[in-house]
Length: 224
Image: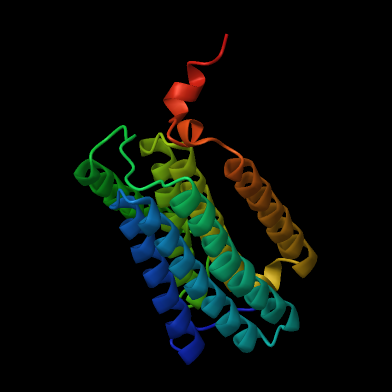
């Protein structure tokens, strides 16, 4: 497998990008405002697009340049703007009060999951001193933080944002391992996920204000 050294400029930039994406995942976990959920996800996607561009330049991959552009336009700009317009303005979602734990407990659990991600992936079969050895633990931690957000948040919209953060973590790990993943697989997964997000946005945009305030727990009570 083609390996990118962590000591190169590209390796350092990818490492910094992964750290920033992880910090934005923590910021989302520590917030209760829907507007900040959307803002942090948008910023995270912009950084992810930058990381994809760095990886494209390092691996001389035209396909990754295309994915970087799509990530910036769709995940970094289009989805946050649509979510802000539909969820924050039209449905007037402001503060997320449907949480199963407090913010401090969530952050402590997030820190524990981050440490777990490093313990598990640092011993993986990754080339020592490579950029992958530094970025893959970060991407794994982002995936776990996104999953944690889906668990501790009971509001359906907040859980959707958590799912999108999970997808960003998966994509971060994929771009650093680009030499071992065919482009058609990455592009197919990316487009499937985008299609799912767009369908969810359309679905949510048709909800009434009362349903928009519902939590996952309340929706489960509707089952007969």
